[in-house]
Image 1: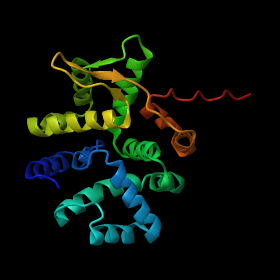
Image 2: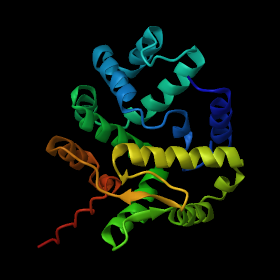
Image 3: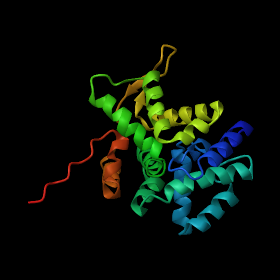
Length: 226
């Protein structure tokens, strides 16, 4: 169930960023791999997204306390999943927990540019360097760069900004990009590569090899033409 505060933050983000390249509506859902799998299975059953949406809401498959909350949650998750290929959706629907997690994160990467920038421009550099520890100052610097490129981020209220940052960091931690707990000294954890099954890796390579960076894997080098 979305609290009144979460609903207000969601609406605020939607209004400010309606016409922006950045999509920050992920604050309405977080990662939610198990719920994403529910929607993927319902899509498999229904055969199309319109009927799947109806079934999810009719059955309260996402276990929300209100229809309004169900609609927001379903909408955000569905818009991500619609960007996955059919094989990726089926792995999300039928795979083991690690595979569901990987496909849910892949869907997030396809929809939310901010997550790609975080992994490509900050986390990958940390893990490739000699300092894999993520600090609060690292995140502050990252957001400052983002705000220079997207001035609309500066229009967010403090509460909305905190929600965006905490949700983004929470998703990174949940998918396995970050280990350890944050502490008062400013340490957020240690950057690490998440566990990927051969099947999940193949699905990433299938139609989104450029998103290898979202799992802290180096982009594949293009072969030179003979």
